[in-house]
Each structure stands twice: as C-alpha cells, then as structure tokens.
Length: 280
View 1 (cartoon, rainbow, N blue to C red):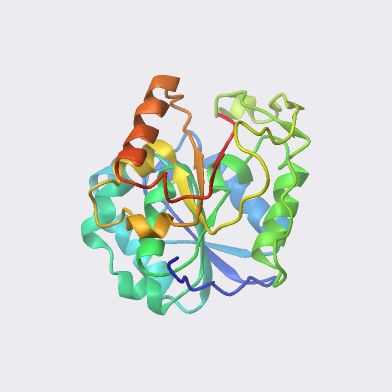
View 2 (view 1 turned 90 degrees about the vertical axis):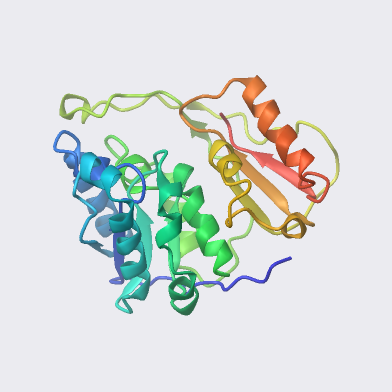
C-alpha cells in the first residue's frame, strides 16, 4: 500500500479555491447563476470563504483552448498558503490534457484538501502520484448548486469529512436518491428533482467483510489513464477496495464489462479485496 499524506482538516472561515479543470461551464453566461448558487452554499452551509482562481470563470471556449491555464490555476491554488482546500467546479472530459503542465512537487509540498468527482478523477490521481490523499466528493455546479437545497445527507457527510479530526466512521446509505435530470436553466431554478426511496447497500457477490485502502473514481476516466504516468502501479491495488462510478454518459453494460475486463487483464482485479460500485 502506498503511504499517502493526509491533508489538514478545515475550520470555519478557511479560504477555499474553486477551479475549472475540465469543462468551463462555471463561467458560461447562461449558467453562471448556478456557480453563484453553489458558491453561496459553500459559504453559508460550511462557513468557508470561496475565492476563484484567475481562470475559473473564463468560460467554456477559453478553458477548452487553454489547458495550461487550467493547470496554472491548480498549481497556484496548491502553492498559496492562504488557501486551505481546492474544490472543482465540475468535471467534463478534458482534464487529461493538463498532464504536461503539472508540477507534482508543488502538490506534495503543499498538502491540502482537494475535492471533486467524475473527470476530476484525473486530478485525484495527480494527487495520488504526488503522495496526497484526496476527497472524491461534491462539485460546485452539481451537488452544491442542487435546486432549492442540498440534501441533508450530503451536507452532513461534508461536515464529517472536511472538518472533523475523528475517523469518518460508518457510511450509511442515503435514505433517498435521484437520477432525474432537470436542465440547468434559470426557469428551472426552483424546480426540485424528484427523489425516491433508496433501497440501501446491495451485495452483488461475495460474503463476510472486506477491508482495505480506497482507490478508484469514474470508471470511464480511470480507464483513459491506463498507459499514462498517472495509472497506479499494480501493487497499489493490493488489498484495496476499488470504488467505481459511471458518468452521465450512461455507458451500456457491455462497455462496463470491457473496461473491467481491461483492469483484470493488467492484474488489478486479482489484487483488490473488494469492489464498491456507485448506483448508475
């Protein structure tokens, strides 16, 4: 197992940076209201102070055309001692283009909380390469900006994970969940998504209990990393709990099979103690 640096926990009033590392939707004129809504939740519900990096709100076209600017924001956020955490605005499909511009020493010398999910899987493995543990969790435009209000389950989980020095402890399933998509339009701002009762954890195969360190992310993105400098060493999977989710692209079961088969072919699956799959 690779030993990782655990970043310091947050305190009320800490400054956190928001970064656009893949898609630049946070700066899109038609949905910047959603970014502002998410930012307000970070400040009001968690008591943190949000600051944008220089290119965070430059919009989709600029962000796409300038992966070096995205990387510059990430490096600057880690290097700034006044910034205590870095939150991704959203994922996308383009983070891998940051690879040539990353200084892993900056991340290692400045350990702090990094949080995001989906395409941000790439950035998590940048942290992993630098020896830093990171938080696979909510993003500004999605979870923080949830219509009407954030689910209490999410808020409580964030507080327990980001602020407490105690072990996170048992992670119970949420009582409700949703996969409904409501278009991000101002006209829909007050339209709540429909949540339904959750059935809890489901054991697909196996028995008993399994323990191990966590390694994983969005399966499609993780699969893109095979062959790059970010893909973990096979021994890093030894004794791990591999956690995986799929994106809103909704890959068919056959694609899931092929990607898992590839992980098996490189020897990763025979090393892990278990696999945790997010509800698709």
